[in-house]
Length: 460
Image (tube, rainbow, N blue to C red; front, top):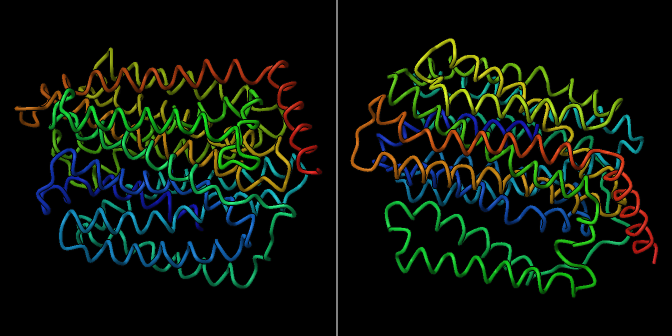
């Protein structure tokens, strides 16, 4: 249920973007910030939330996250302006950061058998498919009938019910040897993601060579250098560099960034295209996107079973091929101009995204000691949110630059969106290439060595 409200919130919001833009007078960058203010804060705090939950109690942090996320949703529905909406989205994100990685840690510590864990993660990941299938329809229906503010009301009953069930059924658990807080590392992560995202989103309007954007770039580089230099020196870093000695874990991180960048860019482009160019209502736009959402829902549990029985390679190869082919249809063959090609592109992307989620999560946590499950799951979740943040930032910046001085005509939008579709195609090919490289015999050997090293460190 926690994953449902977090995932549903994003998919419902995408459908509501055009209505929000008209009522609040927002630009393309304003719409980007309604999404990225949430994903940016979420990505920045996920690892802190995972390690904190391992230290003070997973149920305690999870409960606090549910309360904060639900309260933030209520505040979003009351936002009087774009600035307040962005601020309340950040409140939501603080709560959301305490949900997914902590929930995954609870699952990891409950299902200790690898096959059972893979199946459980497949079912858990299937909720993303449910949110993608239901989100556009629920969002479209609410936006057309009540207004965009009502999309945040969906979170209230689910959040309250999830809170009651958590207090009733979820046992408290902690890591036997939790990690110490890493405030410097946390600050460097926030500076890196914040400056990078702000610079990309604001560059089309401020200018790529303006002092503001160059300052953001310099801050991002300095933060990255500081992170790479500081973290290996700590006995218990926020981001343990030893995790990345495992090729499957490193691959899962890159794949998560690529896949979720493609997803967020895909949703952002298609929502604007269907409503602003084709003139569809929010509900009809949601119905149009069902060919993408339904396969995601159907293939997520299939992917989980394949990971449990055959390993992650086949789901990753299928995901890379289908997501790359979908982007190629739009980039090279103008699929948006033909409804059959449009639906084919949606279908391919839905299959690919449905297949990619389970291998990311399972690979990230399966080779790690249970005491570090929260941190490992948080790294995977952070990679997803970082990908989502960068996807909206980069795709939105490319689209805004292409549409500068133009209206939302079919020709202008197609020309402006074509470079963005090539970026999405490249993300799909990255999933294919990295999935192939990090799922073979050599990669599994690196995972075994890394697991043994981490277990020795945990034991000592």
